Length: 534
Ligand code: HEM
Image (tube, rainbow, N blue to C red; front, side):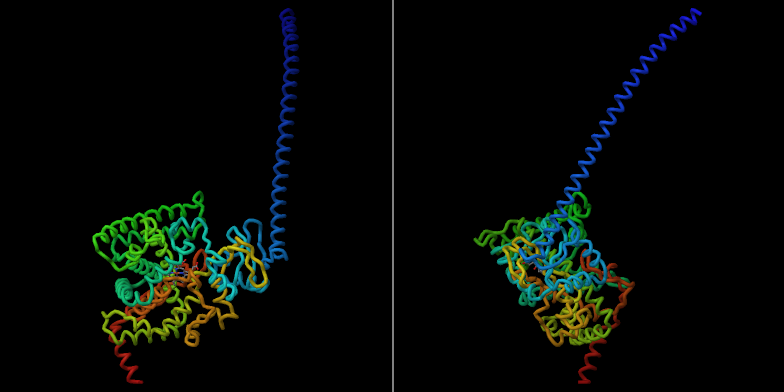
C-alpha cells in the first residue's frame, strides 16, 4: 500500500507534477500558437503589403503606359499614331516572330494600313517612331548631325570599339567618312583593289568541289578581301585563325547583349579583344616599317598619313584598331550575305540566271582563263548590276537604321520630341507596293528601265551613306563573274531566307557545284557564235 500509497503519493506527486507539466506545456503551446498566429498575421500583412505594392507598381506602370499611349497619339506631343504594345516589352515579340519567318512584311503592312507610313511603336526597350515613308527617310538621313544622330546601344559600341566610324560624330566623323570614301572610291578600286579582288575570288573558287556551303564560302572570300584591302595581308593560316575568332565577334551582334546572361555575348567581347590584339601587333609592326620609309598602299597607310584630331596629330594605335575593326564589321556580313542571296535569287529565277551567264560568258570569251577582269569589264556588266540592285532591294541586308532626334522635330504634321528614337526602314520602302511595281517580286529587268530611283537606298543616305558601296558592288560583280563562268550548280537542299536576328538563309545555302568543262573555250565559241549572228 505504502508502496502503493507511496506509489499513489508518488503517483499523486507525479500527477501533480504531470498536472503542472501539462499546464506548463499548455502555456508553451498557447504561446507557440500565439507566436504562430502573430507570425501568420505578420506574413499576411507582408503578403498584403507585397500584393499591394505589386498592385501599386502595376497600376502606376499601367497608368504611365496608358498616359504615354494617350500622349503618344494625342494632341500635345503629336507623336505619330500607333500602338506601343505591352508594358516594358512593347511590340518586340511581334516584330521578332515576324522577322523570324520568310515573310515578315505583315508586321509593317498592318501598321502602315492602320496608322499610315509613319507610326509609333515600342521595340527593343524603347518607344520608336517608325518610318516606311521614302520622303521622311531621306529627310532623316540627310539631316544626320543636324537634327538626328546615329544611335547604337552600348552593347554594339563594345563590339565595334569606341573609336569606330559608326560611333563618331561631328567633324571627326565627316573627315573619317571621307577618308574611308577616298580609300574605296572608283579610282582606287580601278587602279589598285580590282586586281586583288579578282585574284582572291579565283583562288577561293579553285578549291570548290561537290557540296559547298555558299554562305560560309562567301564569308571566307569577303574576310580575305577585307584584310587585304585594309592591311595588305594575304590569305594564310593567320588570316584563317583570325577569321574563326572574328566569327564569334559577329555572333555577339545578334544575341541578347547582357554579359550576365549571355555566354555568346561574353564570348564575343573576348573574341573582339583577341582580334583587336592581333590588329594591334600588325599596326605596331607596320608603324616601325613606315618609320623606316617602307610604304604600302592600303587603308592602314592612309590612316598613318592622316592626322588624328584634325590638328595634324596622328591616330593612336587604339584608334586605328577600332577604326579597322569597324570597317571589317561593316563590310563582312553585308557583302557576303548579298553574294549568297544573289545566287539564291538567280537559282530561283532561271531566266535571270541565263541572261547573267550570257553577259558574263561574253566578257570571258574575250579573255584567256588566266586574264583578270578589268574596270571596263566591270563597267560593261549591265545586267549583272540589275541583279545586284534587285538583290539589295529585295533582301535588304540592312533593313533600316536607327537615329535619335537632337531637337523637337516636325514630320508630316506630327511633333517628335527631342531624344526620341526613330527607325528609317529601308526595307519598308523597297518592298512598298506604292514605291516599286510588283515590289515583292524578284525582277532584275525593272532596273533596265530605271537605274536609280530615289526610293532605292540600300546603302543608306546623307553623311553616313555607306562608303563601301562601290567596293561591295565590284566584289559582288567579280564573284558572280567567276562563279557563273566556271560552275553550274543546283541547291543541295531546300533553304529559306529569314530576317531575324539577321538576314540570312537558314542552312547557309548548300549547293552542289559542277565545273563547266572547258568553260573558257565554250565561252569563246559562244562569243564567236554570237558575234557571227550579229
Ligand atoms: C552589300 C554590302 C553593303 C551594304 C548593303 C551596306 C549598307 C550600309 C548602310 C545602309 C549603311 C548606313 C548606316 C547608317 O546610316 O547608319 C552603311 C554604312 C557603312 N558601311 Fe556599308 N554596306 C555594305 C558594304 C560595305 C563595305 C564593303 C564596307 C567597307 C568599306 C562598308 C563600310 C561601311 C561603313 C564604315 C559604314 C559607316 C559609315 C558612317 O557611319 O559614316 N560597307 N553601310
